Amino acid sequence: MKIVVVGCTHAGTAAVVNMQKLYPQSEITIYERNDNISFLSCGIALNVGGVVKETKNLFYNSPENLASLGVKTNMKHDVTNIDFDNKKLTVKNLLTGEVKEDTYDKLVLTLGSWPIVPKFEGGELENIVLCKNHDHAQEIIAKSKDAKNTVVIGAGYIGVELAEAFEMQGKNVTLIDAEERIMAKYLDKEFTDLAEDAFKEKGVNLVLGEKVQKFEGENNKVTKVVTNNGSYEADLVVLCIGFAPNTKLIEGKLDTLPNGAIIIDEYMQTSKKDVFAAGDCCVVRFNPANENRYIPLATNAVRMGTLVAKNLVEPTLKYMGTQGTSGIKIYDLCIASTGMTEEVAKNTTDINVESVLIKENHRPEFMPTFDEAMLKLVYDKDTRKVVGGQILSKNDLTQYMNTLSVVIQNEMTVEELAMTDFFFQPHFNKPWSLLNTVALEAL
Image (tube, rainbow, N blue to C red; front, side):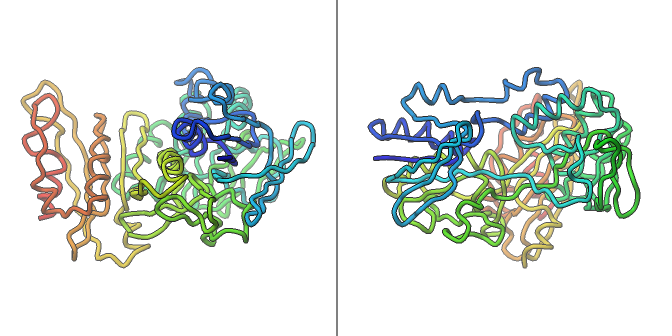
């Protein structure tokens, strides 16, 4: 069996490692545009902030390691066309310019995503950079050394983490977003208010509810970011506006969402036979809303890549969908969420949404120390099913959201969650778990 994998970051790496184990007699070939694989872009901010000292430590696999397993690893190779009917690919060697054809029995598309870059006036100026891959990480670190005024555009997780990292490096930081709140997709206002306060206390300039109009510069280098409401000095700008599926290669050839995300079934099969897809180039089944959505996350990617390998020969293991569970640490605040926020549920579904919010110490007050936790539960008032939750504390209680992810996936009700069995030990918690307590509040 001849297997070709196009693109090899998280989903691709997971697929290849598992396929090599499951089908050792197969011929596996990778075509990757970059000269590296498996780069954890979520660690770029940690690298910028000095927590991770070396950019190279953000890799968890390498072309050399895969090659040692017998995989043909073609780095700096760009697949320019795929003939799905005849199972052929056209591939260009980016180093030599040579173009060749290859064939496959099974094709795995792990094309990933790419940052959204609107066409801004002045967008070609120097020191306006993206934040996605290894090259971007090195560029950000190199350019930030001499930068005094850094502007981050986009206040999702990556933008927020970069703003913190730059502030910790002593930069003047401005964080701009068109939304009225930071991390608005992931957290409700009660939580983003506290995160915003943490930034303000550190002197980060939050510019929210403003849209970037253009960039101005001198000597071909950016000096200012202009919005619809003001202008902000900048000698380094990082664009973190969001991501889109990197699927131009298959445009018009496979079934996709309007944004280009490849539609797959529960076994990772695309609309063409023997063609599988996984990771940020695909739709995912978003369980809380019971619909397909585009949610690019590394956790989704590695699961989906593993499933491709399991289902390559015959349908074997179903994809269970996702809750979009995620976490972030902002200064001393440990924050996590799963499923839908109350705002997202109200704005994107017909669910009759209800929510409860509690503030409770994470362990008994007779213990020498304890921290307050703020926990929110979002549920369907009609069916009683839990559809989301968020937690914030100075103590790391983020694992509660992993537990709540299982609750949502299994369509549990608030009544069931209220009476679910969790252990009690004074070092860790109270007789009623925080998840019990917030569900009891819902009752």
